[in-house]
Image 1 (cartoon, rainbow, N blue to C red):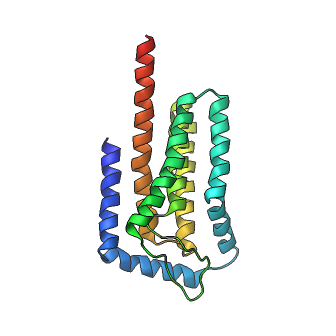
Image 2 (cartoon, rainbow, N blue to C red):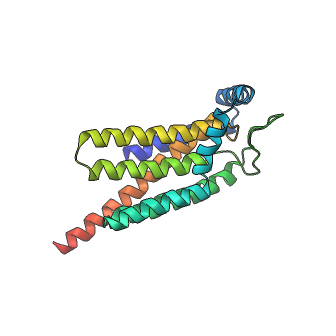
Image 3 (cartoon, helix red, strand yellow):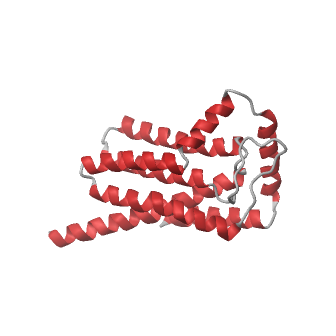
Length: 207
């Protein structure tokens, strides 16, 4: 509940700042135009590859791979959590885009061109939900602290890399990816708490 409240509060504050055209929107423009002016190869191709891996098609493959693994190791409740967290989060993000209807960054020479709304970032949302759930599962399932720490660091790095790629490519503003991470953490907290509660209640009935 504390995590849900904190993440929800961060998202609310970011949304109010963006819709109210507060100081963060100035920073958004400055950062977006700086990256657009300084984009260079092969870094641009790398960022395009990172974004492609976490597009809808890429997330379907990642989702299917993790779902297969969770099914194979009989982690049924984690599989259920995955089924709610990632697809549900992506649908939630689409709904929020239409609520806020923020236009994407505009450049004379854009690296990518997208017709959908900008706030919050869909790629970052999906990545945060996926890697957040993966980290949560491995932290609980693996007793070795080295594995737990390595998992958290790697998953966090992947989320930050995806978020950075969207800002670098000019697909989103900084506030878009920050809001997506906050939104995802709140949604992840809801899903994991709900599935954990379901598991505990079912196990209590069998005792």
